[in-house]
Length: 134
Image (cartoon, rainbow, N blue to C red; front, side):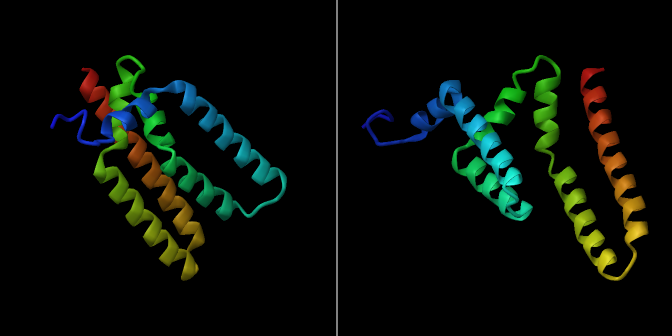
């Protein structure tokens, strides 16, 4: 039995990811739903949660990253940076520590250190891109 006959749905999934005629209307629908949510005063946590579920269920986020990767020279580098686990771990630890510090009353210090963390992450990204280009 060949891969075409085995019932493997992977080629069909790849076709959906590559088909912009499906993904662009899905993206527009997501943006309209987000706008409508803010317009009608829906709680922002509900809007974000719904957008994440919608984006994951429709593979919209994967399509957006793949379109971003099509940008010459910089696109593949940005996709690699988005996939670096170190960036995600540093950001997650920063949010966890920020939550604990805000609960203890250090909100001004949290703002300063979150700013430093964001500049560190931006510096890592810029350094990674320049290192790959040069």
